[in-house]
Image (tube, rainbow, N blue to C red):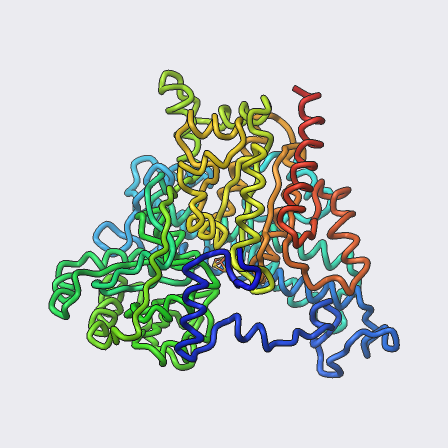
Length: 627
Ligand code: NFS
């Protein structure tokens, strides 16, 4: 591999080259020119009031108000958690509103009735003799109340082991209402409030938990109810999925309420006919970032790429429209789209971008709204300039769609040959306790130009599967794996003997795609169920988390709730906390004493894999003594 290449992915490298030929810039050009602020990098710049900004140096060890480096670092960290938790949870809230408007004759329907009934029962909502949509609306209301309920604590899912809940109770970090936790951070970080790193991190942890076991969990469960719980299906990934002779639409962003309607609209005979009329063979949808995960898990829609590739999709010159809603969208797409014929269409009032075409998505008239957006894309086909078109011929096959239900079913049907389906995680727990699988890793998160594109994910994951650690992925990590062929069943040849045998028997790939970033709640559910089945707390399981190329505030919230859930977490990018010795000590050491897990920071994925395997083996030893 040429060291100078910016990605391990051919399609990406080819299009970076095209950018140079075309004279347009990409994230990597901007990265080359950017000199990151050394204060910001360590987290010791405080902009919370206007007496400063205060920068901590040996000569100025305190801000004007007297805040120490640790106070400043912990506040900055807390605000990242708040930003991330807000984004995930507001996504969950939007889905709850969509469920609230679902109706038998409307655009949004209940697709997984069994899941709805199960959730209703959990929340003690009457189901017998009621119209399914009445139940749905009450469930939606109950979910919406979790955001702002004035009293009591968040309704925690039953997959959470009692032992874990007890740990949180003892530390006084059981989340209350989701919005309330985010607001508490904004309040506590205001000038003149919390000035104690330990307490600030407790507040951060509680907020992060309200995301993982609250907002994100709600987003996943209600999305499954509305759009169906994913089951394994086949797809393809990378920019090679774009089609020369079709209207190419890239769906980018996060909330399935938009993308589900676009998927339907793209099949509308009227629009398919229109595509033919403008000279195309048809309409080709391809996903990007978490929207890609949502629609590939439920419909097998092809994956165009992950976070760092969003500009490259436009650079192919073959994309009629990039349709976005919220989160992880580069504002750079607007000026870039001007250099090609691509229409960059924003749809959410929460994420308007200067220079984009704004076609607001109206959930009340979702289908018509989606149709007009798709129509814009089709009508843009005639503006394609064939001289500018270059579609890299790189794509890979992937099996996706591993919800918890799908994993349990798959293990049941194959391991037990349907004779005695357990409907539980028993087969998975058995594989782990017997040592056939040494452990499990959830590898998640973004791309970050501080890391060679996709290298962090793929190197780490290859090492893990080689050592019989089964890997589950979400977010942009999942797409990196799809592109690298690791989600294909053939990838079992890269797995160690134990994992390869399980994959063969159960007919799964060694790396399982569990969805978008809010779907990390699926991973929590799975781990929680295995812990409950074995009657242990989560930190006792040989299970880890990793975010090798993380970049967003959402990832900070995720990392924090994963650690607070008792799962050690490896970060491949150094978080902006190194200027606060106490903060660093808590995150990378003391959290183990209080929460049973901590953060590890290791930019080298091969070294990180070594550390993970060592840690897993330590945990196995303790576990084996028990069983
Ligand atoms: Ni997650 Fe999804 Fe990707 Fe990172 Fe962004 S798409 S929510 S934040 S970049 S994994």
